[in-house]
Length: 436
Image 1 (cartoon, rainbow, N blue to C red):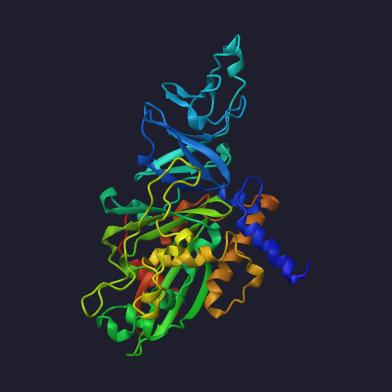
Image 2 (cartoon, rainbow, N blue to C red; image 1 turned 135 degrees about the vertical axis):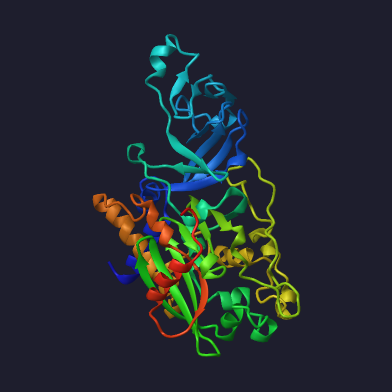
């Protein structure tokens, strides 16, 4: 196999997530956040849920139990989205077959001696778990259900946890890679900002004073980790740490290391659509602070979402999207009020990652040293997914959910030239810790 063909195969293995795929097999070994608990009403209408390329239906029984199952009735494939949510289960409107939240058939009223027949009928159903207002789904082998990952921000008190869902119209990995690409911050988000535009104590001054960080990356028990280093005007070092965590989590350096409790999941809906689920501790502070003139940083605006619909791709769609060019303001771009011309930090990321296409062609890329974390993360994912497919090797974090508790992102200024990994270990020992 030549180099381009090998890269193409790598891209296929990294991006395809449906049943029977290499990456889909890895994803199905983990609990994944799927939807907000408030989307499901006890005894209310089912919701279409697209996850890992599988069209599912989610519903909450009149007693409050959550069910997640194949949307097709196993009788004649009619969609259970139209089903009646009754005591005892979800009833297909076509012939009245009824299923409980475990997918067991509990009634087949159109079959003589139905009680004998229904015991032989079961539809695909997945385990669901609720925590902090999020419905988590496990789509793997029920006989080997893993524990829920112990990501530290999930230990926050419910009132201290902010949750944001947003759909992205591209493959999960290219969306995720935006969070572990450190050098784009100095251009896409703050390319129009100079050091003197910021307050003297604003760490962002280090980002805009030198837009070409020295990057180091390494494998970690939870996935991969990087440190971007810059020398300050006073001779100290400005460090920015971030992480990839299996199977599809990131921790971006969006605040000070000691209290930046933050995690984001990039859950594949299918091969070309992704649900971003952000969890952040409200007390962590803010990466994008007020400028020296007292004005907010240009381009930092609230996320705007369209109303949810019942379509397969109808949940958490952004007002700014490819159909309206993300409402880009060319005058703001020309005047350098906003480097990209696009309002909202997340939408700036969304515009560039979606502009790459549904699945980007990685054989065309020309990677440079600032892409070290991205290259290492791809290798780590491929190695784990292929080992699982080849001989059943369990991927990182599945059996030991506590590996995630040692993952932390954020920035800091330190004196001296201590190795970045040793500095990380020292600083995490001093950091705010939840759940201890």
